[in-house]
Length: 450
Image (cartoon, rainbow, N blue to C red; front, side, top):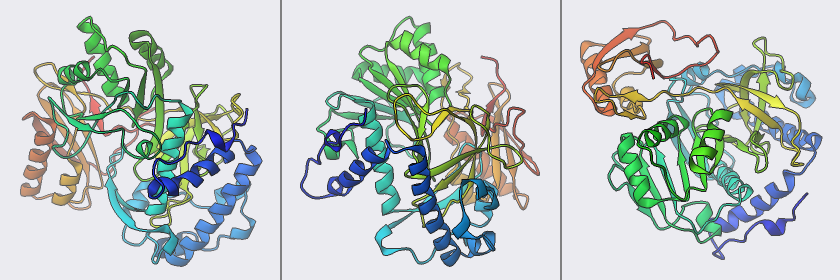
């Protein structure tokens, strides 16, 4: 069924961000029901505009896309556009950005992410990309028909001291964009540096109806609750982000909490790439914002239900254009969804799962590295952290030039400070850090048995 735009709530205020988002939400409400062919046509129009602008205003793309005939581009000829690797983005951070930018794209924001590949990169976004991401966030809220008057809690990582236990941080509402359209219950945040017992105490005190966290953190919470022979009362839904999930976790959440599990596929540099269907467990690619491909190792397109590497183009970000960007995940596209939406179906995301760090006292927690602090000490090309025992950590690094003794000592101190224990840290140098046999790369690997 194709619902009308009347299902989109009107902004609470007559002016402000809600009024900017409202027409975009109406547009998204309509375009989700377009046919696959109509969606592809619209995507290619945006794709061509992006390439024309990037080759005119980015030094990197002027060379990277030299000789590309934009006018003849279609889905079949996309392979003529070279893939952008994370290493290329990192090496060309200073020349990949567009200058100038269209005035309508608004204020520019600079960001940096380590990503789960362990390749730190810098990138820029604009007010326009932020608006699109907020609109897709609100679309996801509406798809899953959440009860906005309930309490919502989030346990996620922040690189500062905000949200530490035992109290975390309390907010008057759920925050943007939901607060622009609905009066909501209170929101709460706890830094995932908190150990699992502290997280459980915090959740049992709040008794939220909605919880957002990372899948590995969720598994650790559930294991501890089972061990304690207790549960969390009143959960309606658990939202996961940042790692891959499987059908087993969906079933476990339903059995242990009598709640629904909803997953988001996003990244800091690309925003929302796919969100879970409201009536199925697979994902819908957010085609209005990204063009997502699944490719074989030779660069050809995978068939449906054939796993391959995920390559994504951000259609709206002209500040740091990411054109056919290999994000480092693997996935599978599938047949059109029975819900009737024309948005492509991403059946599975074979992404990386970040293991939990275990302390000598037996407690487990989400591993925080302090990568931004690393980068202030020395420009690491890639890193990976391996826990070999309860006391021993190895930091593997790829660098252009070997670090000084002072740099090594400082980075080890940063790592120990962020991991929350004075581990014995060994630093080792590598030409490259390869993927596992399954094609995955984890920036944290625990060698400890479960």
